[in-house]
Image (tube, rainbow, N blue to C red; front, side, top):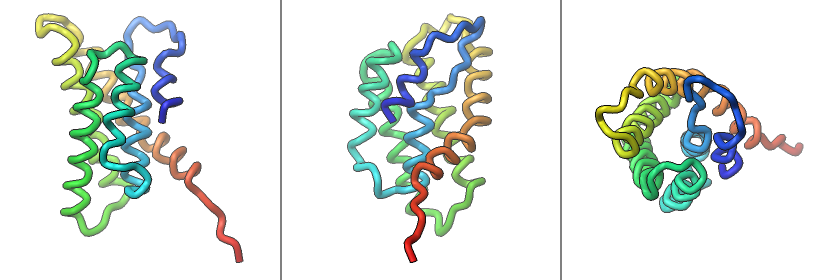
Length: 145
């Protein structure tokens, strides 16, 4: 999780900042894959670390990640079963919400960053199945016979 947040600090040269929030994507992947891994208070600390590393206003990641985590808990209690399409839809909503709300918190309303934000949301949603697959592969434990 922490390593995923640190991926955004790698020196990529880009004209438009469309690098997805890997920390949030890994958190959502693990939450959707294995709900028992993280305590309900863990997004606070992980969001704080992401805020410190990414340069977002302090507390924005803590608030937004925790709200997404709690929203997934509520959705989990309502759904009887889920498949990858539901997981993708839930993660898409969480990623879109966090990036949009982070934009409202971090930049003035007159800033012209909406196109870059939309591209970042699209890239993040498109890459989520790959991140989910990596987390599922890390969680894989072969059965002993």
